[in-house]
Amino acid sequence: MELIKVTTEVVPHVALVEINRPKEMNALNIQVITELVGALKEMNSDDRVRVVVLTGNEQAFAAGADIKQMAEKSEAEMTASDEFRIWDEITRFPKPLIAAVSGYALGGGSELAMMCDFIVAADNATFGQPEVKIGTIPGAGATQRLTHAVGKSRAMELMLTGRFFKAQEAFEAGMVARVFPTSGFMEEVIKLASEIAARPPIAVQLAKRAILDAYEMPLAKGLMEERKKFYSTFSTLDQKEGMRAFLEKRKPNFTGQ
Ligand code: CAA
Image (cartoon, rainbow, N blue to C red; front, side):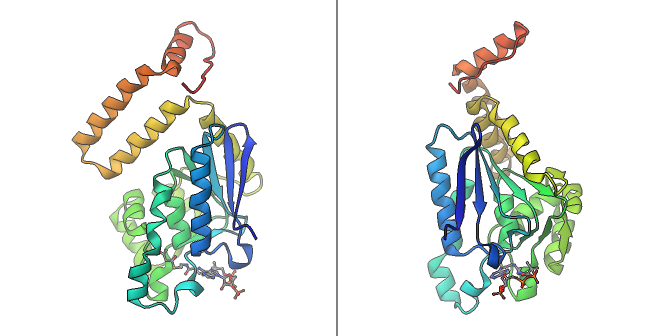
């Protein structure tokens, strides 16, 4: 069975990637993450793809790392295999990557969503970092990314209790960008993805990179990087087209160059 289903052009320039392990609530074993990383690599070199939507099914985006696969491992085995290293590849994907979360996004599932550029949630979505309830801690980024997203106090309360929280709370805390009704959810997500896909792709990817710099660089360096990227857009045809179209009061025709 394919663990990752890819539809390259669900609408023009938008690829849909579905995690497909429904019986196990889309628990993320090594095979799922390896297939996902492989699929992203292919989409990176596919010029038709400008935006990728990562989703699960209505019941679960993903209920975490696979507990069966890791339960009996020793510290030495966990350290030697360093399974989360391959997850880092997801954060290096240069095109916009949207997490569309319906149902459960728990543990590594919520962390996978947070590795994406932003999260859009169905109103039935349930998030949580329940690792402390099973004797461990988040290992795929939540202590850092959730804390950046919602602030120290809320992050502490959520991760020290391990309690579940719903889409609306995640939205109000700043973890989720948009919440849509569960019925018609994917249509709304695809519409949003299409809006981004209609923008000039070089500028979109530069903006993404510059925003991520805000997490990874001191402010002064991030500002310098932003300025360099801003100037670099003036070497693109799409910048000329975008600004000329504005001045000529017409719609721009972007070519991705
Ligand atoms: N790993 C492996 N299998 C899982 C799983 C997981 N994370 N989550 C669910 N499953 C499996 C269940 O074992 C069950 O399988 P069987 O039918 O073979 O028993 C099947 O999926 C359906 O699950 P439930 O019967 O439990 O369904 P439910 O509706 O009663 O509950 C749930 C759903 C609330 C998601 C519950 O399954 C649950 O709490 N899952 C575990 C959540 C969790 O602790 N995640 C963190 C994992 S650790 C981690 O992710 C570390 C990290 O930082 C990367």
